[in-house]
Amino acid sequence: MINWQANVLPKQFNRRLNNFKRPVNPPLILTAVFFTLIIFGTCLLLLPFASVESLSFIQAFFTASSAVTVTGLVVIDTGTALTTFGQCVVMVLIQIGGIGFMTVAVISFLSIGKNLGLKQRLLASQAFDTSDLNGVIHVAKCVITYSLIIQTIAFCLFFISWIDDYGIAGSAYQSLFYTISAFNNAGFALDSNSLMTFKSDISVNLIISALFIIGGLGFTVLIDIYQQRRWHKLAINTRIVLIASAVINCCAFFLIFLFEYSNPATLANLPFNEQVIAAWFQAVTPRTAGFNTLPISQLTSDSTLLTLLLMVIGGGSVSTASGIKIGTFVILILAMYSYLRQKPQVTVLNRELSDKLVIKALSVVILYLFTAFLSIMIMSKIEQASLLDITFEVISALSTVGLSRDFTSNLSIPSQLIIILLMLIGRVGPLTFAYCFARPKLQPLKFAKTTIQIG
Image 1 (cartoon, one colour):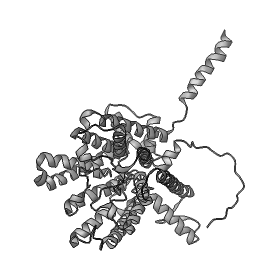
Image 2 (spheres, one colour):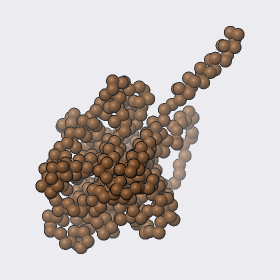
Image 3 (tube, helix red, strand yellow):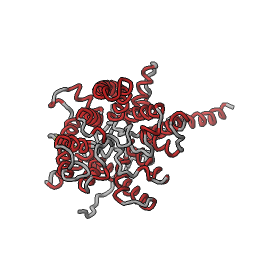
Image 4 (tube, helix red, strand yellow):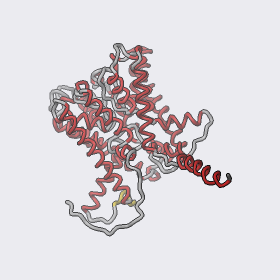
C-alpha cells in the first residue's frame, strides 16, 4: 500500500507540476489578447445602436481590427455609418490598442491592490520590449501618465480651435476623437475625406502632426527625455530615434514638396503657405498616422514610392506606430556602412552594437518583406486591381498606417481577411508574431564554420 502511493501519487503530482511549470509564451498570449479584444469590439459594433444601418460581421470585424491595431483603414465611413456609441467604441479600442493592453492590465492590477506575478511581468516585459522585469510597473505608470498629459493638452488646443465652428459640445467631441486618434497614430477621422477639409488650417495640422510624431517616438524615449533632460545624458536609443526622426521628416518634407509642387491635383493650385503646410503633413504622416490632407490616389509616382518607403520604416519601438521601426532601419544602415568601410564592428555614437542585435534587425526586415510579398502575391490573384494599389494597401496594413489609394472599400471578403491578419501582425510585430509558432531552442553543439558566396 505504501509502495503504491509512493509510485503512483508522485506521478500524478509530477504531471500536474510539469503542466504548471510549462514555459509561458508571451508572444502567443499577447497576440491572443489582441485578437480577443478585436472580437469583443466586433460584438459591440454589431449591436443595433452602434451603427446607423446594421453592419455585417466582416464590416464590424474589419473596423474593430483596424481600431485595435491603430491602423485606420476603413470599409465604412466612421463619421456617418456609426452612431455616437459606435464611434465611442472605436475610440476606446484605439486607446487600448495604442497605449497597449498590457499597460491597461498592469494599471488595473495595481489599482485593485494586486501584485504582479512572474507570468504577468514576463508578458508586460514582452509588450514593453524590455528585459527588466522589475521596471515594467514603472514603465506602465509612465505610459499612462504621459498619455493623459499629452492628450489633455492637445484636447484643450483642439477645443479652442474648433469652438467657433462646432460649438461647445461639438468641439469637445471632435477634439476628443481626433486627440485619441492622432496620438495613438490610428488615422480614424469623422470625415470621409480624412483631414482634407483642414489642409489650410495651420493649428489643426500642427496639433495633429505633433501628436502622432510624439506618439510615434516611443514611450521609452519619452520617459528617457523626461528623466534626463540633457542631450548628453540621453540613452543612445533615444538620441538615435530623435536624430533619425528629424532627418527622415525633413528629407521627406523636401522631397514631397519637390515632387508635388507642379502637380495640379495636389499642391500646384494652392497658395505657397498652404503648399508648405500640406507638404509637411503629407511628409510626416506615412511613417505613423494615416491621416491625409492630400488625395493619396492623386500623388505622383515619385511621392507614392516615397510614401511606401516611409510606411515601411515606421516609428519608434514601444510606440503607437509600427513598420520595421526606426531602430531597425538605422541598425541596417549602420551595418551596411560598416561593411563597406571594412570595419570589424558596427558602431554608433562611439558605442558598439552586438552581432545579435544586427541579426535581429535583419530578421525583422526579412519577415516583414516575406509577409508583404506573400500577401501581395495572394491578393493579386484575388483582386482585379493594379499591382500598385494592392502593394500600397498591403504595406499600409502591415505597417498599421491606414493610408489608402481609395481601394479599401472595394476589397473582397478574402482580401479583407488578409488585411485584418496583416494589421494584427503589424501591431504585435512580425518577429513577435513569428515567435508564436517558433519556440526558442538552445543549440548545445558547435559546428565547424563554412562560407556561402553572397553579393
